[in-house]
Length: 264
Image (cartoon, rainbow, N blue to C red; front, side, top):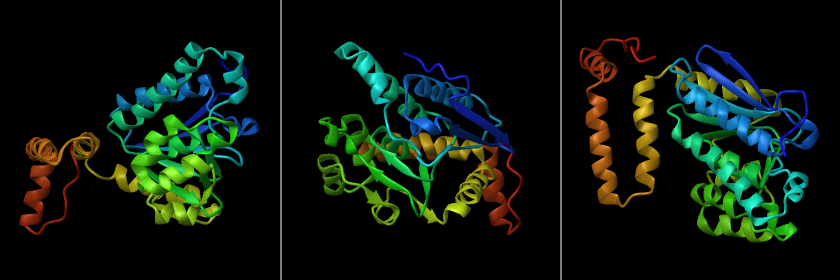
């Protein structure tokens, strides 16, 4: 059942090539309802086709980043078909994050549990406040977090990921940073600025090269090493043919400042 609230489920702000998408269900701990998943996937798909957007930040309003799926909504259709449709919808949204050419940064100010933790793992980068916590806590309700395990197990050491999945226990921001689940920890009052600065740094880089690189990054992770090198060589060769790469290398050889990127 879709959300019926009049307030937008996702807020969007665009400024100088950086788009911020904000989960806007603070009263529901930003639970990932069907409506939220559909709205977020729709925004991300549109961004993927928009060459004016260079980097994306996904944040949330309120105390929680996201408490995961909307359990009340899930119980409204307890059939296997209904549940499968929900998890498929969630998986499609998560895959869209990796599929679009722009890097996506999670901006985590509070708890990120179950599918909310999955969302952090699905993002290319993540910055968090000192009070942020992370868990795959479905097991406490009798539900192994199978879909969250896909991104969690790809971001965390295997045994740490499995411990989180079978205990449901939280890890704090310090542990999340130590295990490589997030990139930075900052005081809460610095979180927005930190995410924006990271996005701005990315937005100032050549967009075509980043698009090449992001696509290759995820493809090669799933490939055998020999195949990964073949993919990487092809990507490098294609990237070398771009005007930005040729101009950048020529400037370096001539000991001149980097040129303005044509692919911005």
